[in-house]
Image (cartoon, rainbow, N blue to C red; front, side, top):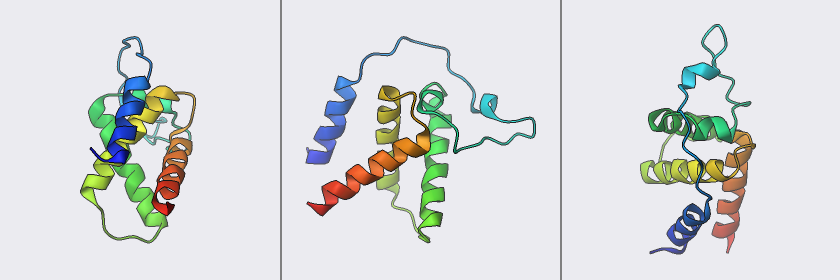
Length: 115
């Protein structure tokens, strides 16, 4: 087990159990024209939606950030792991916005890679 996987596992195991709640369709967060403001979505909303919607959002955010960085390729295993880390983080920090959560995770990854 790599150090990174051990960290993810430790975070997942330390995350308090959240009472079961009804899952919300991603479309519930859309405006009357069907648009979802991705800059305002919260971790609680991500954690409370269906898994396939959470995965869809994770892929969308990955594409957005890669586009901002002028990157034209995708590392599939890294994206899948990043989405998992985001969901774990969001379950523990439901008041945060998703973009803030991504920022925290990217900075932590950058710090780990600098060592």
